[in-house]
Amino acid sequence: MVTADLMSKARAGDGDAFRALTEPYRAELRVHCYRMLGSFQDAEDALQDTMLAAWQGLGGFEERASVRTWLYRIATNRCLNARRSATRRQAKEWNVPDVEPPEPTRLGEVVWLQPYPDTLLEGAIDAPLGPEARYEQAESISLAFITAVQVLPPRQVAVLVLRDVLGFHAREVAHMLDSTVDSVNSALKRARATLQRHRPPMTNREPPPAADSNSEDAMVAKFVRAWESADLDALVDLLTDDVFISMPPVPFEYEGRDLAARFCASIFRAGRRFDLVSTRANGQPAFGAYLRAPNGISHGTGLYVLTLAGDRIRAMTRFDNAVLPWFGLPRSLPTR
Image (cartoon, rainbow, N blue to C red):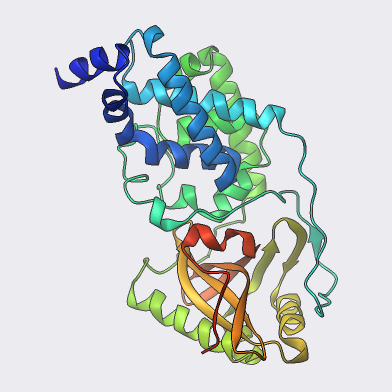
């Protein structure tokens, strides 16, 4: 009765009623757009487009599905349009002054990737899932998952996220995409096969410690001490043998402890020292990195996100300093 009353008022042009109808789904819709686009900025834009389209299309909503399902349909199609119309974003060149990184293992496929602040995940990944969901919500927001999904064609991304992450039935997804159940099932099969080839193997890999647990806190403290003191040996001791370093939108990727050590050595070379400020991104430990300067001010150079396996670091992703404000981090701060 409450929803029917709000719907009636919203259709009559009551903006407050419309917000009351849609606000409970805003956070999870933003995450949905992020999974499909891999970009926090693009997800924000798609969310705004979704809400505008929902407001303008409210008169045509026939209420055959729930408000939530209707909004997911709009959001999914807005994201598909964004992916299809976007020009291929160019990779950036390495431009850190006085740092010459080693030759990378390879150049990455996915260069347009951005981190997602954990402060916006509250209430967004706790939504009830359909019975056919195959992923834990924490796993499906991780950088490894988001990166792997971006190699899929747009339609396969939509089907995989709607079916395997959110657990919508094939018939519901077919309706959202103006397709058939057979077409949805075929796209899902291809998406799963491609994703399996691109995701790192999980066999014999220790799970990460629980978020904010004593084990995770201990790992974070060790990393901070090693990085801030430029203790390369202590840092390398924290890495798995197959550790992986990436730095979108720079396409350089480094695999293995030796190359990771050489990359970190290039960062610390010439007496460069940093202060780290802890935060969280994609459900993972993250740090704003601030380069110390002689004038007593540390300048933000980027954000590092760690992927843990047991008591080791198995991946480290570096983002440029443009992302710092999303995490409430300043561009500069007094040197400690």
